[in-house]
Length: 218
Image (cartoon, rainbow, N blue to C red; front, side, top):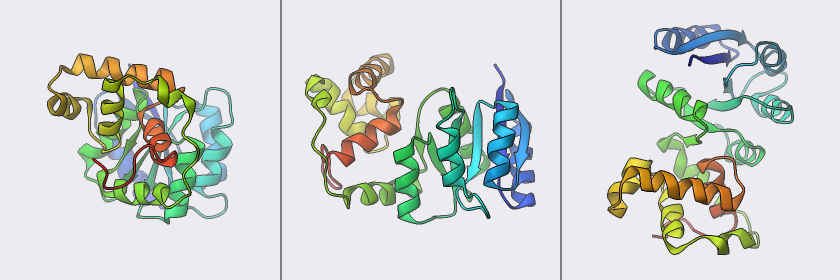
């Protein structure tokens, strides 16, 4: 299945570069472009992409406002935010509203393509270079009361959730835990179901926001 993309960035050269990288990859098609948040909303609603590559800082309606608007629509696209190390407040707010991931604009093309595939498949992703700042941003907030759903997790699922909060992939979790990747996928699916969250990124947000894990905690 072809992954349909809309690219939104106020710099024409960046849009051209993102389009070039995506359209030279198998199974991807850029179906629209936008130069600001308002245009991103309009083009996305018209073209109905699978993934929106959205610059977090744009003139007029910025990426955060555009994402908030689109995520209120029925069946919104997966949104992959592009950042050049924006403020922690923006990172925090974007995760709270439900974006699917963050990627640095300086990331190599292969990381961009992998990120697109990951979020298109329904998973969440944070660029490793952004992860510590995102964690610190959530950890700085007063912890919420742990949701009762956490108590429904088995001991193994708790272990897997803690590994998810370290940004590990299914393969890395399998190696760390000494089990197969299929088993890890099953545990992750159960965690998402029990916590009633959309993807692993939202599960990580819940874990840090509730104080279930804290930075530096193993």
